[in-house]
Image (tube, rainbow, N blue to C red; front, side, top):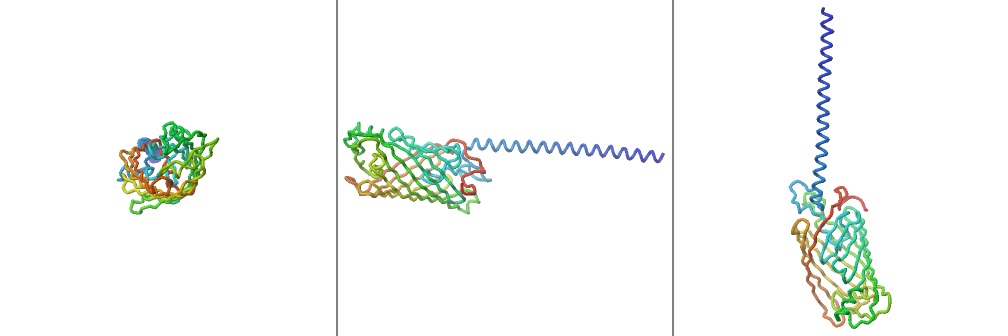
Length: 326
């Protein structure tokens, strides 16, 4: 009898142990499934957040939405390119589109009626240095014919022969980031310094009696526009993020080439503010100093610009400030 009792006790113990183990495994599976669903849910929320804020990287806790923008600070004159598949459309400055990481297509869209133009920029980078080469083609022939018919003598003076003119741009650009340690370690600069060297020249396909254009911003660009020679230039620029909503940029550009006086200096400045997360407004000026024929030595041109940003930004792991030169 006592032996039977021991056998029954062992059987019951085995049954209870099996049930406890089964309940434990079931609970683990439920927790595992819940964990997978939770991870999937979080991934979906992150994806949806990226879709709603196409240009915005992930925001640190307590960060303002506009504080996370890192595309506005990179002007088209800098060595960086826009995100893969992202773009901006501007009235005065170049409109830009990211073909793929490190490769950008740009154009002054609203000049294309008079001067069809297209530029390609290739970028390499590491933590603080950005290097780029920019190459482009443009032609002022449509604009020259347009000005000639309307007797705009400052652009075309009594020309009878206006051939097709192909102009070429080649530029080398270097930018350096200056980070601010007081910004809670966010991986974005607040000052960008840029230097560059470039040359433009024009090739006429046929006879031409075009003469140098008159006036600041035109005479020093005439050799490439009318196909009479070349214009080389050096540039230095700085872009500063004053606040998350306000950027200030500007610099100097010195021209040397086949135009009257052979030298010209331009200074420009531009203040840009975000109106809404995808839309910005800019106001600025270009100040020119030169010894051109039949014109004053100094001139100033004020301007304003409107820019709309669209497209989907690059993934966070491949952001603007990634490691390694590429």
